[in-house]
Image (cartoon, rainbow, N blue to C red):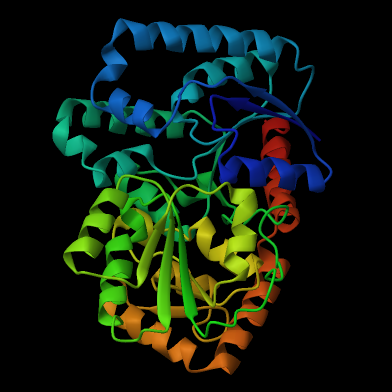
Length: 381
């Protein structure tokens, strides 16, 4: 099988890296045709706030797609054209190219750009742009021969929102990239007696970082428990301000760390934190950081949901707590601090589950099977 992985997708984004690596491990020849459109999250936010209508942005889009057309001319033959995330804006060009190439088109939707824009307040600030994003995503999801998401609950949301049949979707979990996230021995055993709680990420609303800071406040009398929050993002300034208002001395904020360095940082942590947000986006998917903690052989505490509990068993693969309840997080941290046997079991069984179901190799086989089905149906028409 030969796949053309196509579009303006983010090459450094974990979903795309895992999907491409997984397909290659499954024996698929993947040729990448990618040209960047966005310079970063602020660029995307500005476009959503109305920048999409500016002549400069429209010229950039035109230039990007000209380069993509040049790239695909040198791609050779392939069995399926696959769009990486985010690919909703690329579908319209890709649909024409797939027709001309007589190949099926598959979109890895992964996340709803409309739902993300809504939860970050962009739709409320620019209702007209919000309607345009919703229309674009609705149309984009109707053009491919098949769509891919990570959970059945997210498929349900797309069905409720856009009237899309569940049969149009294949499921490939998020997983984690085991080339990066793996067990690492700490450089030296901790001798200071501290219990280290680690969060790392992009400080986006669905992570529920405020809940982490408030849990730290609930544990401020436990001088041996310390929190490290690594990363940058839209909610970081608010989190730092809240920690200051609460007078916390048990929370340390660290700037961005390259992901290749994270396993070494996690090696010194006693617990890794997942996601605690209560939004639709947060509860209908299982974020990479949960699987990454498992891949690094660390005990993980994360917010529960119907989606999460279908994949992970509380007290076995991870410690699951109610979302939006800082006291529940504080209690979970104390429980794991006082129960090293439980911590060890969570780390071991979580790691085993990851190795069995959520590595790139496993996900690549699942993706290949989906693509084989799409190709078979397309050729039998």
